[in-house]
Length: 284
Image (cartoon, rainbow, N blue to C red; front, side, top):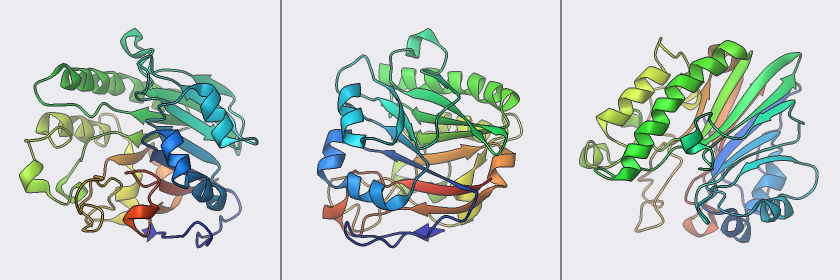
């Protein structure tokens, strides 16, 4: 597992090998704020083919202006202003797109988009997903479970229909103790670390649904690599993080995964979001 720590004017990222499709996912925590903090420098240096974004929280015109020319942009705004919003931004032109997860209840939630790409004569479907953060004992948690229930239905459908499927994004659940620095004080006390949530991920990565956790598979049995740290306190400096941003791949796509990197900023004040991008190279 690589951890890249570039500065805005210093490129230290590894070059792609021929035939590689580089996919990055990041919750930008508001794309306008992220660009003010230097996201454009990161994107210009990273040589990404497909970028998935969550918590875009901006009108479509603003998103297109910030990202600029040379990109294909699939963006689902949330009906609630200033909330959610997901996008797939790509150098490759999609062959087909779908703007939500398929249930009317979430049609305007800005939490799921799908884009199909033709790569090497095969269909690669890339999803940008933003699962609800939830809150124990509230309607927010009810919506989170409802969304996870729809994912249980949609993920096998995609796997059956497409050559390769990659579901990326901020899924707001720590699957195992390795995915959270402070597991014991949070387990079954906070949303994102509840056994009722974790069982969904057991199904996603188990025989029933059959996806693979790319970062975990490539990194091995290690703590993290974390991708989210609270803005508050010393969480970032102490690496008291959560691993809640995923690449979930069908098995054939996992076999093509060459490397994973979490682009953790070198210092607290150089972050463009409270999440770090998770970047994987897939060899086609």
